[in-house]
Image (cartoon, rainbow, N blue to C red; front, side):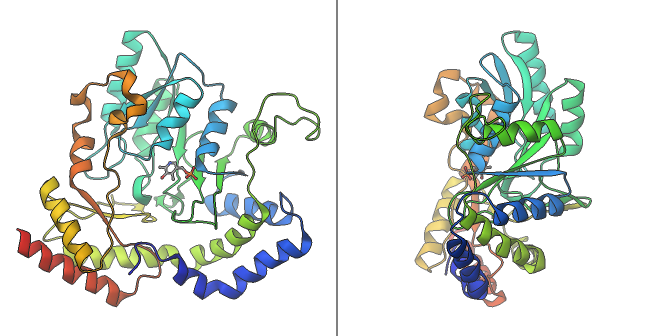
Length: 378
Ligand SMILES: *Cc1c(COP(=O)(O)O)cnc(C)c1O
């Protein structure tokens, strides 16, 4: 059994994917071109925004926005404490200071009340200027944009939606990657929409920002790439990756998003009486990058994970360490009391196999194993 079965997906779409890749090779146009243009158009349309700008990966997508917005030393950027390292890394990369914010214990996403408290504290301390909020759509569930966008407008901050795990989710029909001033996603193979290597994209309705990003991602190009009007980076999506994504986006829209939600319902129905199962607020849809349960404590979680492994059932812990405890951020001396929820989650969460090709009988096998191991260790 696989945690995320990419081979099952390839088997189903082999002929389309092989043809798409071969077409790029036949045309020998490996950077940019038709595949990338078509993909950007389709992605923007699916998400419901004016522009999609593809780039090399999800981390660079966020870095490009930091550059475009001129975020620099002396600026404060608010990032959830419970996320992948990248969300905080890109803040430090441009010299700004990441201010970590604790998350909600039920949704695992940035807690708006604690966000506002952190903003007020930074303003009162007077050393940094608050500039950007980066909510993360953790495990596929969109963050609480309703509240966060209100706070952003009160304090005049920009919002960057980190939708690396969130592509396909929605709130009352408004799709993930359409929130905030701009949003980003990742096409790393294990994400909800993944390619066959690294890839990423930025989404926005802002024409000027789009123009700037299209320059920054190609060495700050002006009229053409040998006319350089600013310092940029080299961050493009390969044509082969775009060709693969064009096939996979169709599958994602046709059935994959529904299929992960099928697995979610099966799991939750059969596990909610013994463990804490994911909470999906009213009107929200998750793209289930992960299906994550909560156990009582670290000992129970670790024992259960070891037992499942013995039965050949893979499970993973996202994340074992809060951002504020990463060695790379050591110099900031964060106050432990500000991150009680994240610290507890790092000890108690466990992610179970989750992907659109998980068959009902496999889900039942996982449920049975989990239930009997859980009874045994209780
Ligand atoms: C994967 C991920 C990223 C980074 O994406 P890459 O394409 O690997 O650079 C950023 N944020 C979150 C929350 C992620 O899960």
